[in-house]
Length: 127
Image 1: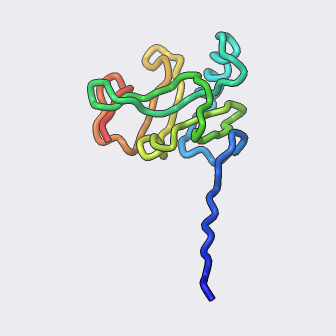
Image 2: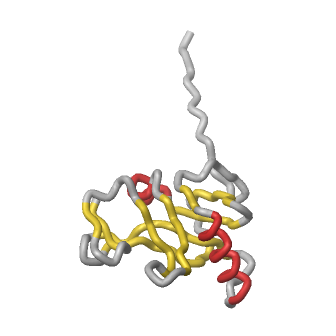
């Protein structure tokens, strides 16, 4: 008698939500919601968080409303829909996204435990 092995693969569907691998502070969530409500963001779009090549340290953070693509991970954080490419997780896992509205810090800030070096502006890092 021959054994037959069957492997099951979990397929992530667009409505699959997981624990988000990054922390998004309440101030950042409020600003994300404000931006989504005050700009021309289409209903099918979500906030994409990730990285891209460039910046003075090698990688820059990506934070933009974007169309959902096949293979994206989907998260719900404080009422905001977040999407990420799976390949970006290793660069951002454990990161904190915050929003400051004061004189010294205005805009989104990133605190990333995976960054070996960061630039002075705080939006570029090396891993």
